[in-house]
Amino acid sequence: MHFAFTPEALAIRDSVRALLLRECTPGRVRDAWSNAGGRVPGLWGHLAAMGVPGMLAPVERGGLGLTELELVLVMEESGRFAMPEPLVETAAVAVPLFRDVEARELLQSVTSGTKVVAVGLAEAPFVVGADTADIVLLEHAGEVHAVERSACRLEPQTSIDGSRRLFHVKWQPARGTCLVYAERAARVLGGVRDRGAVAVAAQLIGLARAMLATTVEYVKARHQFGKPVGSFQAVKHHLADAHIAIEMAAPAVYRAAYSLARGDAQASVHASMAKAMASDAAELVARQALQCHGAIGYAFENDLHLWMKRTWALSAAWGDAASHRAQVSRALFEGKHAGGM
Image (cartoon, rainbow, N blue to C red):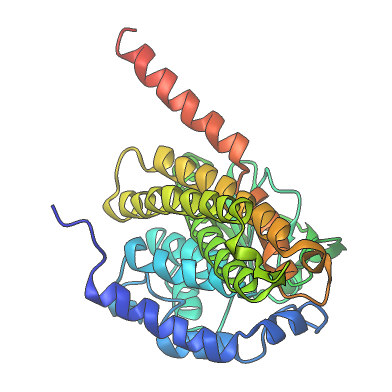
């Protein structure tokens, strides 16, 4: 078997990386903490021109007709640059949902990049980016609703990551806003949660890679007692542990993306494994990066805090590691029990 990404997937990843190197610099991410929308001005337009929001949409609907295997690498790049755009909610969650329920007008609007989406599930008290979204996907009584932002009342909440604006959304369910009724909603919502978890897991891998690379460069340049601090054994051990954690978690994320792309019956289990491992790995890398940076790592002026705080926010988003481990445990126990254990 050939365990590798296709040349097409790698080419898309490289194109997005080149775009983000140019348009999503640490300075622009920092600016997103204090600007009106919490986003990088103009960046979504560039992504839309490349077809990124519609990667999972069919070609006949204006999309690229690709799968989660291609998208997972793009999500990882968005994490590497701490990109403050609604890529998870729009490209990874909304597009396949609109595609599967045949909401053609909504699918066309998000695939073309003219509209972006925020997502609020029953277990999540706050909605990320509801203020700049055009459509808010909300769960009510086991149903899925697509609500115009103008029909929502938003109450801002405090966020550890200044570019991840949080809101409590108040709205009134109506027949005209319902996309999926209760009889189908359980399966649809399961897919929403799995795709959101895998996309965020990929972003956490990208964040971890960025923090590790930044820290390696820092300990090469920082000298103490006349030597680079990176030459000290304790520092080497910290960074080796961080590297191992990333390399153990990344394949689980890619496997989960493969399962989603293939409609694997165990996709939910694989998604939970991916999110648990990616959350743990990224949190470990953040701790080691902070330790190796020393006091400068605590400074708001240092870019490291942008990646650390995004990591802390995403590690809890779409289910934290403990909740996903519990889901894996339940699946394993139920499978053994069903098999006559």
